[in-house]
Image: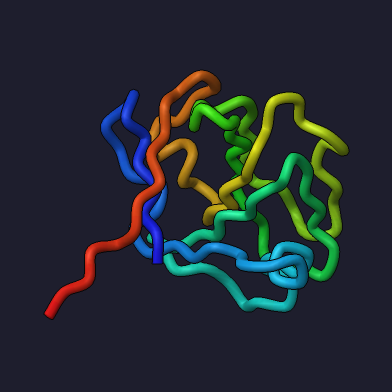
Length: 121
C-alpha cells in the first residue's frame, strides 16, 4: 500500500492506495471495480494519459512529473470518457475518489510525495 501526500498544501490525497504493478495491471487500472474507499486510490506508472472505458464510477486524476510535481489535474471524470491523449511532463497518474482534489486543495505545481504505508503490529 502507498500513501500520497501533498507537501505544498500539507494534505493527504490517499492514505491506503495501491500501485498498478506490471503491464496488464496498468492497462486494466480500475476497470470493472465497484468503487474506491475514501482514502483509496491507484498509482499508475509510467502513465501520461487515461481512459474511463468500462469504469463504473467517476474519478479525480492527478498527473505527476518525474520531480513529483503536479502537471495537470482533472476533477470528476465520468465513465466512458477519454482523458488527454498525452500530458506533457507526466510520469505517473494517481486515480482518486471524486472530491479528493478539492478536499486536498491540490493544484498544478504542487509537490507530492509517495511513500509506503507504515506496517503496524
